Length: 325
Length: 243
View (cartoon, rainbow over the protein chains, first blue to last red):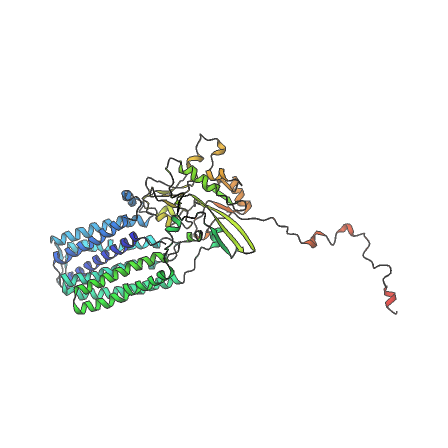
């Protein structure tokens, strides 16, 4: 498939935003049961939610560049019964709304304590909103992953690993960002987020490697024989019916050289997993925001490469019909 | 239930592209608007077509055979492109099984083209909506036209009658009989899309009788004939054997 930058930015930006939001909720949940010191509502959660919103809005804007007719985008919410894309179109604004409510409640400290246990654990209204938001976050990861995972002919995508990878990679990048953000706004949480960021990055490395191994051994179900219905081992296309290219030749091939395609895999393995883990470890020991932010930026660039490879690797069966001019 | 479809006879298709041009001509002049053609007479021409004719070579030289292969929307009975559409612009008509795109609802997200394993949906780069074969839905029901012309433009244009049009759900229709009797098949059956369009294979008439079988060895008419005998001057058993 042709890697469209609109979709690459959409999935990586909202992934980072969703991950950061999950990090905030994780932090607040731990604080609610007094495992972590509680943080300033405005400084930490309010500003954190604002950053989440920036990422989600960025992703939403990127998604519009993918549409031929963005002015009709509102129609895309209608087919949620059958289409994962439609479900994503509903869940994304719903999550943005929840993040907005969560951020505003924190920013203005409208934070009623619903009840307190004998041990001192407090359930705040914001945490309830946050947990609903966290569910919406996971739902959005599911929708995003299933958009690709539900297409059975794209065998590279048609696997539960697609959803798992979208979830773990997005969460990892959000937690790395949370580490840098915490170092600046809530230093005592920095180590907590840093360790989680490392664990999730390693988990994502395992599942992404699993999908790379799976994809390298895929046997294509469609062949020249089934595409034409001709029983002969040797079939060669001589003409595709036109000479100047069409949507079929532009949208379904990555058009990159074999070397670039192969190297992209190693580029993302190094930039998404190896370098960030080292840089985070260094950033934690030095407690340096710039270093931690660098880890996020490196991983984000790596995720762009990862998404590019994700699309480029998928081989659409229609390509059988478009092999030569 | 009705399921309109095309039957394409690969045995007679000569790859002339008449179906491609007549399809484009009819559909670019329709009420749904033109079909984009960018740089038609200069470098890198590109545009939207509902129908393409491709050419394949089967076998290895010198034992090769050329296959001309027209390809358009197969109007699947279980179309994978329809449920993925987020706006409901892609739909399958209940009354005749034609898969259509509502150009006023389409947002041009291309997701349906990803979901079609046959690559028959082409986005119109000017109107930014997805387009595909309509089976000339604006023609086949047009009562202004004489009945013989109420067929898709490609079917009327084909000079070798390689394209048949009809209801594949009616077991007695011409197309159903043809599929049944001439070995009609579907493309990429492995995906369970159940394409309504069928293809007829290349068929050759070969004699399946061996040369030996042309002369019947135990022909009863020859029963009373004299059996084979040695020439008169050939040595007999008496000549060579001492009793």
